[in-house]
Image 1 (cartoon, helix red, strand yellow):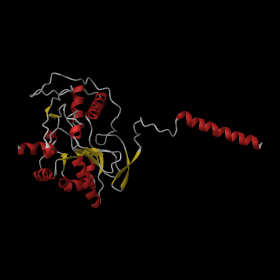
Image 2 (cartoon, one colour; image 1 turned 90 degrees about the vertical axis):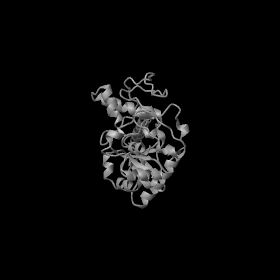
Image 3 (cartoon, one colour; image 1 turned 90 degrees about the horizontal axis):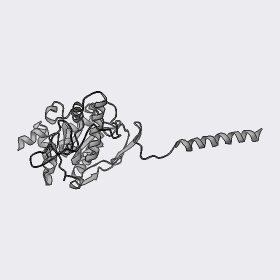
Image 4 (cartoon, rainbow, N blue to C red; image 1 turned 135 degrees about the horizontal axis):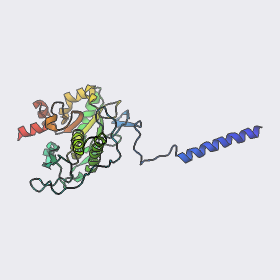
Length: 299
Protein backbone atom coordinates (compact mmCIF):
# COMPACT_ATOMS: atom_id res chain seq x y z
CA UNK A 1 0.00 0.00 0.00
CA UNK A 2 2.82 2.37 0.88
CA UNK A 3 4.46 1.85 -2.54
CA UNK A 4 1.14 2.39 -4.29
CA UNK A 5 0.63 5.70 -2.44
CA UNK A 6 4.10 6.91 -3.39
CA UNK A 7 3.48 5.93 -7.00
CA UNK A 8 0.18 7.87 -7.01
CA UNK A 9 1.82 11.01 -5.61
CA UNK A 10 4.59 10.83 -8.20
CA UNK A 11 2.01 10.48 -10.95
CA UNK A 12 0.18 13.62 -9.77
CA UNK A 13 3.45 15.58 -9.66
CA UNK A 14 4.38 14.47 -13.17
CA UNK A 15 0.96 15.47 -14.53
CA UNK A 16 1.25 18.90 -12.90
CA UNK A 17 4.73 19.45 -14.36
CA UNK A 18 3.51 18.41 -17.78
CA UNK A 19 0.64 20.92 -17.55
CA UNK A 20 3.02 23.73 -16.66
CA UNK A 21 5.18 22.86 -19.64
CA UNK A 22 2.27 22.65 -22.07
CA UNK A 23 0.59 25.88 -21.05
CA UNK A 24 3.77 27.94 -20.68
CA UNK A 25 3.38 28.97 -17.07
CA UNK A 26 6.38 30.93 -15.97
CA UNK A 27 7.54 31.60 -19.54
CA UNK A 28 9.04 34.96 -20.42
CA UNK A 29 7.27 36.28 -23.52
CA UNK A 30 8.76 39.68 -24.30
CA UNK A 31 6.52 40.12 -27.36
CA UNK A 32 3.32 40.44 -25.33
CA UNK A 33 2.03 43.84 -24.24
CA UNK A 34 1.98 44.29 -20.44
CA UNK A 35 -1.19 43.20 -18.72
CA UNK A 36 -3.10 46.17 -17.25
CA UNK A 37 -2.04 45.04 -13.77
CA UNK A 38 1.65 44.57 -14.51
CA UNK A 39 3.71 46.35 -11.87
CA UNK A 40 6.82 48.28 -12.80
CA UNK A 41 9.43 49.87 -10.56
CA UNK A 42 9.81 53.48 -11.60
CA UNK A 43 13.16 54.54 -10.22
CA UNK A 44 14.52 58.04 -10.25
CA UNK A 45 17.81 58.63 -8.43
CA UNK A 46 17.73 56.36 -5.38
CA UNK A 47 13.94 56.41 -4.99
CA UNK A 48 11.75 53.55 -6.19
CA UNK A 49 8.01 53.76 -6.60
CA UNK A 50 5.83 50.76 -7.42
CA UNK A 51 3.59 51.85 -10.28
CA UNK A 52 0.76 50.03 -12.01
CA UNK A 53 0.84 50.47 -15.77
CA UNK A 54 -2.39 50.94 -17.67
CA UNK A 55 -1.24 52.05 -21.11
CA UNK A 56 1.20 54.26 -22.96
CA UNK A 57 -1.33 57.06 -23.22
CA UNK A 58 -4.91 57.35 -21.97
CA UNK A 59 -7.79 59.75 -22.06
CA UNK A 60 -8.59 61.01 -18.56
CA UNK A 61 -10.75 58.57 -16.63
CA UNK A 62 -11.21 56.30 -19.65
CA UNK A 63 -10.03 52.80 -20.48
CA UNK A 64 -6.38 52.24 -21.40
CA UNK A 65 -5.19 52.97 -24.91
CA UNK A 66 -5.20 49.86 -27.08
CA UNK A 67 -1.54 49.47 -27.90
CA UNK A 68 -2.26 47.04 -30.74
CA UNK A 69 -1.99 48.79 -34.11
CA UNK A 70 -5.50 49.68 -35.19
CA UNK A 71 -6.88 49.11 -38.64
CA UNK A 72 -6.60 52.80 -39.48
CA UNK A 73 -9.44 54.09 -41.68
CA UNK A 74 -7.98 55.19 -45.03
CA UNK A 75 -4.84 56.90 -43.79
CA UNK A 76 -2.76 57.31 -46.92
CA UNK A 77 0.04 59.46 -48.21
CA UNK A 78 -1.24 62.45 -50.15
CA UNK A 79 0.40 64.64 -52.75
CA UNK A 80 -2.36 67.25 -52.98
CA UNK A 81 -2.00 69.28 -49.75
CA UNK A 82 1.01 71.33 -50.77
CA UNK A 83 1.69 74.22 -48.41
CA UNK A 84 3.67 77.37 -49.30
CA UNK A 85 7.30 76.53 -49.89
CA UNK A 86 6.46 73.13 -51.34
CA UNK A 87 5.89 71.38 -48.00
CA UNK A 88 3.64 68.33 -48.26
CA UNK A 89 2.02 66.87 -45.15
CA UNK A 90 2.40 63.14 -45.80
CA UNK A 91 -0.82 61.92 -44.14
CA UNK A 92 -4.41 62.25 -45.29
CA UNK A 93 -6.54 63.09 -42.25
CA UNK A 94 -9.70 65.17 -42.86
CA UNK A 95 -9.28 68.69 -41.49
CA UNK A 96 -5.56 68.26 -40.76
CA UNK A 97 -3.49 70.31 -43.22
CA UNK A 98 -0.54 71.85 -41.35
CA UNK A 99 2.21 73.94 -42.84
CA UNK A 100 5.86 73.22 -42.13
CA UNK A 101 7.07 74.17 -38.67
CA UNK A 102 10.05 76.47 -38.40
CA UNK A 103 13.05 74.62 -36.92
CA UNK A 104 15.09 77.18 -34.94
CA UNK A 105 18.76 76.51 -34.28
CA UNK A 106 20.74 76.68 -31.05
CA UNK A 107 18.89 77.51 -27.85
CA UNK A 108 16.05 78.98 -29.92
CA UNK A 109 15.09 75.39 -30.72
CA UNK A 110 13.48 75.20 -27.27
CA UNK A 111 10.75 77.50 -28.61
CA UNK A 112 9.84 75.35 -31.61
CA UNK A 113 6.09 75.42 -32.25
CA UNK A 114 4.38 72.24 -33.41
CA UNK A 115 0.63 71.76 -33.21
CA UNK A 116 -2.27 70.95 -35.50
CA UNK A 117 -1.25 73.87 -37.75
CA UNK A 118 2.52 73.29 -37.81
CA UNK A 119 4.12 69.93 -38.62
CA UNK A 120 7.69 68.70 -38.53
CA UNK A 121 9.18 68.31 -42.03
CA UNK A 122 10.61 65.18 -43.61
CA UNK A 123 14.17 66.17 -42.86
CA UNK A 124 13.49 66.50 -39.13
CA UNK A 125 14.50 63.20 -37.56
CA UNK A 126 15.83 61.99 -34.24
CA UNK A 127 19.29 62.78 -35.64
CA UNK A 128 18.44 66.44 -34.93
CA UNK A 129 17.93 65.61 -31.26
CA UNK A 130 20.54 64.84 -28.67
CA UNK A 131 18.32 62.25 -26.99
CA UNK A 132 19.28 60.82 -23.61
CA UNK A 133 17.45 58.69 -21.08
CA UNK A 134 16.05 60.55 -18.08
CA UNK A 135 18.22 59.42 -15.15
CA UNK A 136 16.60 56.56 -13.28
CA UNK A 137 13.49 56.29 -15.48
CA UNK A 138 12.28 52.71 -15.68
CA UNK A 139 10.98 51.89 -18.25
CA UNK A 140 13.53 54.17 -19.95
CA UNK A 141 12.12 57.49 -21.13
CA UNK A 142 14.11 59.73 -23.45
CA UNK A 143 14.17 63.50 -23.93
CA UNK A 144 16.39 66.10 -25.55
CA UNK A 145 19.55 66.12 -23.41
CA UNK A 146 19.04 69.65 -22.05
CA UNK A 147 15.37 69.03 -21.26
CA UNK A 148 16.24 65.74 -19.56
CA UNK A 149 18.88 67.46 -17.42
CA UNK A 150 16.47 70.14 -16.23
CA UNK A 151 13.70 67.60 -15.67
CA UNK A 152 15.98 65.60 -13.39
CA UNK A 153 16.92 68.76 -11.50
CA UNK A 154 13.21 69.53 -11.14
CA UNK A 155 12.55 66.01 -9.87
CA UNK A 156 15.28 66.34 -7.24
CA UNK A 157 13.94 69.71 -6.09
CA UNK A 158 10.44 68.29 -5.91
CA UNK A 159 11.65 65.35 -3.89
CA UNK A 160 13.23 67.73 -1.36
CA UNK A 161 9.85 69.43 -1.12
CA UNK A 162 8.14 66.09 -0.49
CA UNK A 163 6.56 65.47 -3.91
CA UNK A 164 7.29 62.71 -6.41
CA UNK A 165 7.39 63.59 -10.11
CA UNK A 166 7.22 60.38 -12.15
CA UNK A 167 8.01 60.64 -15.90
CA UNK A 168 5.35 58.79 -17.89
CA UNK A 169 6.00 59.64 -21.54
CA UNK A 170 8.77 61.59 -23.26
CA UNK A 171 10.13 61.35 -26.80
CA UNK A 172 8.02 59.46 -29.34
CA UNK A 173 8.95 58.92 -32.96
CA UNK A 174 6.55 59.61 -35.81
CA UNK A 175 5.63 55.95 -36.30
CA UNK A 176 4.62 55.63 -32.65
CA UNK A 177 2.66 58.89 -32.87
CA UNK A 178 0.91 57.64 -36.01
CA UNK A 179 -0.03 54.39 -34.26
CA UNK A 180 -1.36 56.19 -31.17
CA UNK A 181 -3.37 58.60 -33.31
CA UNK A 182 -4.92 56.00 -35.60
CA UNK A 183 -5.72 53.77 -32.62
CA UNK A 184 -7.69 56.64 -31.10
CA UNK A 185 -9.45 57.31 -34.41
CA UNK A 186 -10.48 53.67 -34.56
CA UNK A 187 -11.79 53.82 -30.99
CA UNK A 188 -14.18 56.62 -31.95
CA UNK A 189 -15.11 54.90 -35.22
CA UNK A 190 -16.07 51.85 -33.17
CA UNK A 191 -18.36 54.10 -31.12
CA UNK A 192 -20.25 55.10 -34.29
CA UNK A 193 -18.64 58.43 -35.20
CA UNK A 194 -17.80 59.28 -38.80
CA UNK A 195 -14.17 59.24 -39.91
CA UNK A 196 -13.99 63.05 -39.93
CA UNK A 197 -15.58 63.29 -36.47
CA UNK A 198 -13.21 60.62 -35.16
CA UNK A 199 -10.16 62.46 -36.50
CA UNK A 200 -11.22 65.73 -34.85
CA UNK A 201 -11.98 64.01 -31.55
CA UNK A 202 -8.70 62.09 -31.59
CA UNK A 203 -6.68 65.23 -32.37
CA UNK A 204 -8.00 66.89 -29.22
CA UNK A 205 -6.22 64.23 -27.13
CA UNK A 206 -3.40 62.90 -29.29
CA UNK A 207 -1.77 65.14 -31.84
CA UNK A 208 -1.52 63.90 -35.44
CA UNK A 209 1.85 62.47 -36.48
CA UNK A 210 4.56 65.14 -36.93
CA UNK A 211 2.34 67.59 -35.01
CA UNK A 212 3.22 66.37 -31.52
CA UNK A 213 5.61 68.04 -29.11
CA UNK A 214 6.66 64.56 -28.02
CA UNK A 215 8.36 64.18 -31.41
CA UNK A 216 10.63 67.13 -30.58
CA UNK A 217 12.00 65.53 -27.43
CA UNK A 218 10.99 68.60 -25.41
CA UNK A 219 7.70 67.35 -23.93
CA UNK A 220 7.15 65.22 -20.84
CA UNK A 221 3.96 63.71 -19.42
CA UNK A 222 4.13 63.48 -15.64
CA UNK A 223 2.29 61.29 -13.18
CA UNK A 224 2.75 60.85 -9.44
CA UNK A 225 3.50 58.01 -6.99
CA UNK A 226 0.70 55.49 -6.78
CA UNK A 227 -0.67 56.21 -10.26
CA UNK A 228 0.66 54.95 -13.58
CA UNK A 229 -1.44 56.78 -16.12
CA UNK A 230 -2.66 60.18 -17.25
CA UNK A 231 -5.77 61.69 -15.70
CA UNK A 232 -7.19 65.15 -15.21
CA UNK A 233 -7.39 64.47 -11.49
CA UNK A 234 -3.62 64.94 -11.48
CA UNK A 235 -4.42 68.63 -10.92
CA UNK A 236 -5.66 67.71 -7.43
CA UNK A 237 -2.29 66.32 -6.35
CA UNK A 238 0.54 67.96 -4.38
CA UNK A 239 2.80 67.24 -7.36
CA UNK A 240 0.69 69.37 -9.69
CA UNK A 241 0.47 72.22 -7.17
CA UNK A 242 4.25 72.16 -6.77
CA UNK A 243 4.77 72.15 -10.54
CA UNK A 244 2.52 75.15 -11.03
CA UNK A 245 4.61 77.05 -8.51
CA UNK A 246 8.04 75.88 -9.59
CA UNK A 247 8.19 74.27 -13.05
CA UNK A 248 9.09 77.52 -14.79
CA UNK A 249 12.22 77.82 -12.66
CA UNK A 250 13.45 74.68 -14.41
CA UNK A 251 12.41 75.74 -17.91
CA UNK A 252 9.03 73.95 -18.10
CA UNK A 253 5.52 75.26 -18.73
CA UNK A 254 2.18 73.48 -18.40
CA UNK A 255 1.41 73.46 -22.08
CA UNK A 256 -2.34 72.85 -22.33
CA UNK A 257 -4.18 74.73 -19.56
CA UNK A 258 -7.91 74.78 -19.01
CA UNK A 259 -9.65 77.58 -20.88
CA UNK A 260 -7.10 77.77 -23.71
CA UNK A 261 -8.48 74.89 -25.79
CA UNK A 262 -9.56 77.17 -28.64
CA UNK A 263 -5.96 78.40 -28.98
CA UNK A 264 -3.99 75.22 -28.37
CA UNK A 265 -6.59 72.99 -30.10
CA UNK A 266 -5.91 70.46 -27.34
CA UNK A 267 -8.07 69.47 -24.38
CA UNK A 268 -6.96 70.35 -20.86
CA UNK A 269 -3.91 68.21 -20.01
CA UNK A 270 -2.53 68.99 -16.55
CA UNK A 271 0.11 66.26 -16.99
CA UNK A 272 1.78 67.63 -20.15
CA UNK A 273 4.78 69.89 -19.57
CA UNK A 274 7.02 71.40 -22.20
CA UNK A 275 10.64 72.53 -21.91
CA UNK A 276 11.19 76.01 -23.38
CA UNK A 277 14.32 77.11 -21.48
CA UNK A 278 14.48 78.76 -18.08
CA UNK A 279 14.30 82.42 -19.10
CA UNK A 280 11.53 81.76 -21.61
CA UNK A 281 9.56 79.70 -19.09
CA UNK A 282 9.80 82.46 -16.50
CA UNK A 283 8.55 85.01 -19.02
CA UNK A 284 5.69 82.80 -20.23
CA UNK A 285 4.69 82.00 -16.65
CA UNK A 286 4.63 85.69 -15.75
CA UNK A 287 2.59 86.58 -18.86
CA UNK A 288 -0.20 84.09 -18.18
CA UNK A 289 -0.23 83.27 -21.91
CA UNK A 290 0.05 79.94 -23.68
CA UNK A 291 2.98 79.35 -26.01
CA UNK A 292 1.08 80.25 -29.19
CA UNK A 293 0.01 83.62 -27.73
CA UNK A 294 3.41 84.39 -26.25
CA UNK A 295 5.26 83.68 -29.48
CA UNK A 296 2.83 85.82 -31.46
CA UNK A 297 3.19 88.70 -28.99
CA UNK A 298 6.96 88.31 -29.07
CA UNK A 299 7.26 88.42 -32.85
